[in-house]
Length: 174
Image (cartoon, rainbow, N blue to C red; front, side, top):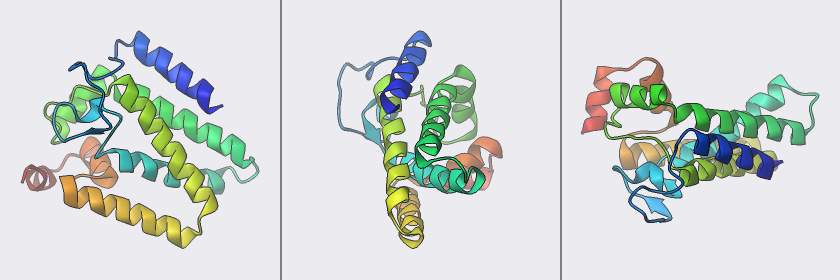
C-alpha cells in the first residue's frame, strides 16, 4: 500500500516537473533553512509531517471508527500524498512566498516529498502504538522544537497560509 502511494506520488510529481533531487545536484540527509531546505531528504518541516501522522491517526479513529487501522492508514497516506502534490503546485508555492516567511521557496524535490510521506507514516504508526498522553507530548515537543529553532511549525504554517498575520510574519523574520 505504502509503495503504491509513493509510486503514484512520484509519477504525478515527475509529470508536474518537480526535480527528483535538489537542483544543486547533491543529496543530503538534512536541508538547512534556505533555498536547499525542501530539496533534501529531511528539513525543519519534517517534524510537522510526523505531527500530521499523529493528527490523522486521531481524526480518522474518531471520524471513521468502523474502518480497520489499515484502511485509516491508507486514507492518511492518500491525504498526505495529495497534500504533497497540491503543496507543489504553482498556486500554493506562490501562496507560501506571499503569505509566509518562505520568500525563496520553490517547492519540494520529489525526494523531500516522499520523505514527508514517510514521516507522516512514522507519526501515524507511532500514534497507533503509544498512549494518548505520550502522543500529545510528542506533538507538543515537535511543535515547540520547530518553533524555537526556526520560528515556524505546523500551527503557524496553517495560520499563515489561511489568514496571514503581519505580527506573526514580523516575529518570524526576527
